[in-house]
Amino acid sequence: MKQKWIRRIIGGLSFTSALFIFQACYGTPQDFGQDLLIEGQVKSKSTGLPINGIKVSVVDNEQYEITNEEGKFSFYSEMLEDIVLSFQDVDSISNGLYMTKDTMLNYTDSKVYVDIVLEEMK
Amino acid sequence: MISAIKRYAFRKFKESEVKLHELNYLFWECTTRCNLNCLHCGSDCAKDSAFSDMPIDDFLKAIDTIETNSQNFTVVFTGGEPLMRSDIELCGRELRKRGLKWAIVSNGHLYDEKRHISLLNSGLGALTISLDGLEYSHNWLRNNDFSFKKVIAAIELAATSNRLNFDVVTCVNQQNIDELVQIKDLLVSKNVKAWRLFTIIPIGRAVDNSLLSLSDFQFVSLMEFISEQRKQKEIDIKFSCEGFVGNYEPLVRDSYFFCRAGINIGSVLIDGAISACPNIDRDFSQGNIYTDNFFDIWQHKFQPFRNREWTKKGQCKSCKDFKDCQGNGFHNWHGDKKNVLVCHKEK
Ligand code: SF4
Ligand code: SF4
Image (cartoon, rainbow over all chains, first blue to last red; front, side, top):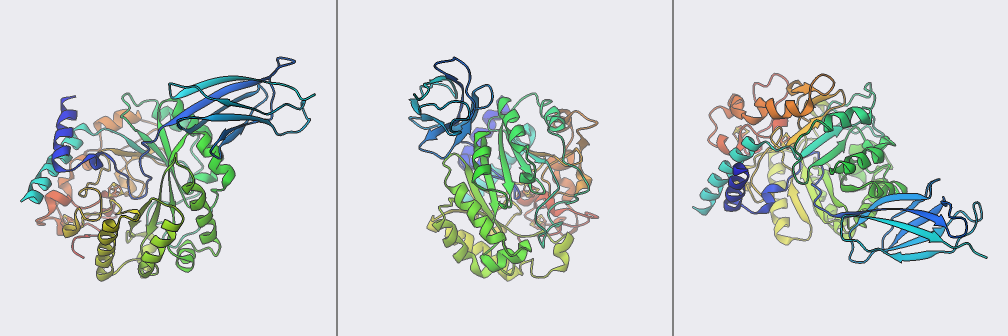
């Protein structure tokens, strides 16, 4: 611990925080970014069963994931002030046809879990 | 006077970093397969596709020996071309579950929209793509007529992400040294924020190709170019960590030269060898994940990396800058190790 304080003091004397940021010639920059782990499950309102093939996308960036057999999804996304997730049935009628739903995420942590229920189209 | 104090403080800072030797940057040479056959290949690492890819579980077992994770510990997937593996995302997710960050060095050929999204979904945080010139000179070095177009498409895609800490690296050589301004303009037009330049170590195929290495005059003009561009602030440009550059310290980087190999930088190489940067002579391996506890090796070995007095030989023996340079970047000691391969200051 003492060593870490020495490090900061001497580091500050000679330069700035640039000292603690480095990369090797053949490496990448270090990752100081923040992201959010978004996980959840999509179910049918009428049957209560999971739905696969739903496209879960972040409105405002290009990221999306398709739900699996258990209706689940899990992905990291940039931490924005407001994140709106859109749930869209993209596999046509192969397992029912569902209405698109958008939802704003509420999160205070670096991960969030959302349970979503989609209504079937009449 | 102020500069002398800064240099002194920086030496002390390096000493304290060596004592701490906190591992926070780990290369994983996850494959030696590659989809290109670059002219300089073999000069920077031991490319040998006779090795099969290391199974993820083997690597994770080594990772799980790490007892104390430093803040911002990053695993850097390197190769070969890491995107030749389809399970990179799986490994990335496993690392994130352990609270670790991860990054990729890529030649950009397989970096399409689908891969971009699946990598981001799996928690990729930093990315480096190589661009080695304008179309002709890039394709020349990459030995591939279509490489430039593919790399530019990958760069455009990567630059769209606010999440990624993304930079472009360029290997400066005789073919592209006169086009650096145009390359910079191209990168700025593609919204690239950071650009790193490096030169080639004269080993492997690079020894026989005179076009790959810069003359001393060209090297100095590269330093001039970087220091001038840093004042313009159009792009965050820097010279890579590769060597001590005398009077150009610290004009070409954010701080003075400091080779952190074995001090903060470690690696797990394709055959399980434990070392530091992949371009370092493999004789310096300190152990092997298949026979040793990775963290144990990190904590208790790596003496040649943490005490560089042994590099006081050849032209470094009586060098007045030894205290600041310490025998240059560790990757400059290959073969019989009787002398440093390159002294950047001398140029
Ligand atoms: S002679 Fe050796 S120690 Fe001196 S500047 Fe050159 S590489 Fe560094
Ligand atoms: S050995 Fe040192 S100088 Fe060379 S790439 Fe690694 S950290 Fe940089």
